[in-house]
Image (cartoon, rainbow, N blue to C red; front, side, top):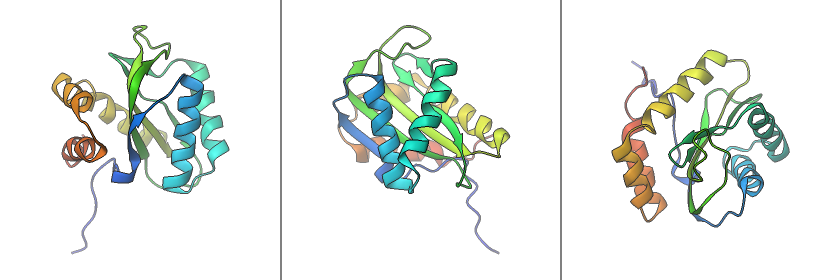
Length: 158
């Protein structure tokens, strides 16, 4: 019997970035697009354009210092993600007006809207866990953050 990966989301270690000194939301989106291009081989400008267009529809600032910028893109078969821990919070125009220091960025296949919504819901549930968020903020390197998130993502999303 062939093993099938049933996880909705996979977060590569390389996709966890810490210690970022970001001045503003524009710079953050530039870095996110650059990372999606570097790690997943996607077109940097296309990533930036799609994430910015989604953000223009309404802030993806989730609240409590967390943002989940996301979009759908051609050329991938499953959701791909980045997790960024910022050195200092930035103004993000979040729903609760709080500045953001934790960012989960996600791109999903363009033609799989239901999958995108399931992945987004899964991330949203993970990041509502106050204990996990506190641990993410307290983690001092990408390995620790990857271990924390990897453990949660091992569980199959509902």
